[in-house]
Length: 283
Ligand code: DGL
Image (cartoon, rainbow, N blue to C red; front, side):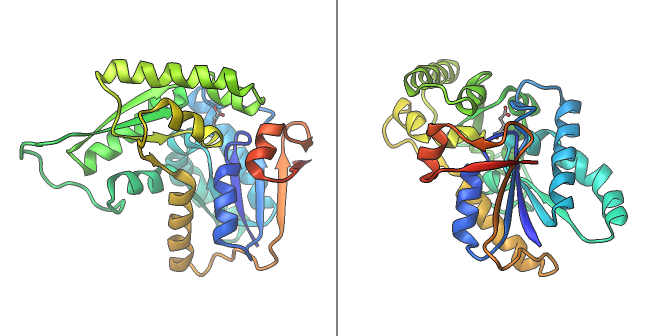
């Protein structure tokens, strides 16, 4: 059996990379839905359908657990699939499978609280507000998942989202770093203008952005902490697998990379981030 990792494209590799370090003997299948990337400008229904199709491919290739290493899929489709589709699909498949997301671990890391924790009252005056900026795709921003879920847990954290409509596509297609630098600086400035100041911390709420985390870091005031999704997701998966020994992550260190798009090598920015040539097979 294996762990499946799903994204619309190469962004989820940032999470995959950390998961492989954390679970070196596990087997992994990575699926990039590059035929349909980017997801960030699509409707909710399209995102749900594409995410379901990606999960089916991974379950059919023997994955027991699929990690949606994609904020857009996790924030728009995950709850819907878990509630309305997965129970019937498990019966059809005749085995226990599950889909995990990336948003819950990120919120746990941002709030310092377990997901189950919800603030039980409102009232006390908040002396100091911790301002958290979230850079994401338009679909993730529209879902308001970070604003809603963080607000349920922490009254002293104010969340402001900045949708970045074209950024995932640019990273996916290997845009020049100079071009990316100026687009990222524009979004950092737009967010600061809207808030009236820079955020105290930031979430790169699209896994593609982690590939150019250094450009976000350079555009934000020096030392602004970034909440790292790959790390948070690896921690959450370790806890999940410890609680669920029925899910078998495999033991052969087998890694497969698949795409619904054009098979073969990825562009140099991805390879630089990955640290080695990376070739995808046709899904
Ligand atoms: N990497 C994805 C995310 O985390 C998807 C980006 C896209 O396809 O627009 O949101």
